[in-house]
Image (tube, rainbow, N blue to C red; front, side, top):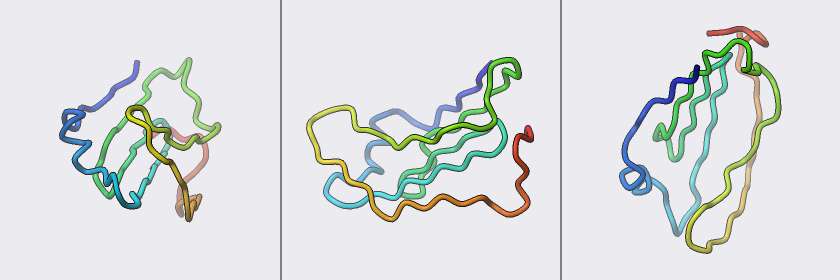
Length: 91
C-alpha cells in the first residue's frame, strides 16, 4: 500500500516553480518515505507501506519536464547521507 499526500492542485504548485530562473530541488529519502521539495515548497510526499514490494535502496533519478518545450539544466548536484540515518530502516 502506498500513501500519497495531496499538497495542492497542479496549478497551485506550478506557481512555486520559476520558469525564467534556477529552481532548487531537494529530495529527502528516509526509510520508506520520500519527500520532494522545489524552492523549499513540499511538492510530494510518499510513504510506501508495502513491505513485500518496496525497496529501501536503489537509484535516484532527476526530474524531467512534461509540458511546453523548455531547456532543462542541472548544476551543483549534491548527494549526502544525513547523520544518524541507518540503511534500510523503516520509519
